Length: 273
Image 1: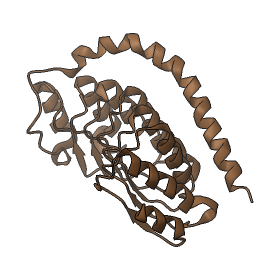
Image 2 (image 1 turned 180 degrees about the vertical axis):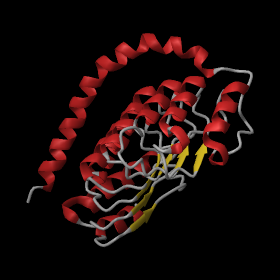
Image 3 (image 1 turned 60 degrees about the horizontal axis):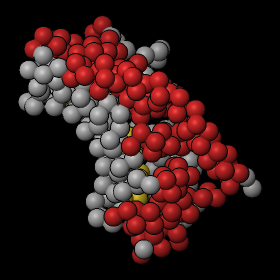
Image 4 (image 1 turned 90 degrees about the vertical axis):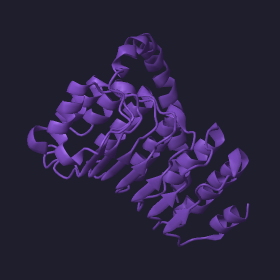
């Protein structure tokens, strides 16, 4: 609560860190609400770095507060929401708010948020809509599967001068051959489509030896060593089980879009002077 009081009374912060505090859900809710207040009406308009990793923003109230707060961060360049229990719905709100803020975000960490294929699509939409500004994307320890990785890879296509991405982390994301080859395709011949890429992390996934070979040829020394790769498994074997769920997920998306749109309208009204 004391940290929340500091936020509520501040007006010129550029760097906020509230990470690994063991605040629990109640404490995280208080901080999310305080951030909402601290960033409303143009206060702390020059905030550049926000680190909230290892908190619990799993309920609707805290996610809505984060949505409103992030929508006011036009100067934000660094955002760490690792291990915040956002899941797909929370990640969707975060991505939509970042787009609405029109910030030049360079670093985004959404690792460890139980993000699945649907959430990966929202992240991909944000990457695409943000105009290729993102330099670091960390999505480790999420259940993206190859289908989610395909969404992410597809977002790097289409930039005339190549995407700005420098580091891409997809460790432990249940990725298999389909996702690996989508990443290779996104990289392009001799890396022409991702000319700024210096590091790609894919450890803890399920690539057979021939796929590992393809990744090594494509990415060369940019590929971080994969000591925990499961070369005997194949994550893509289970993808058929997801197909039956996709239609239901897509049907639910329109309803969720309406909820996010309503939040956006409310946020915009609060910013009208």
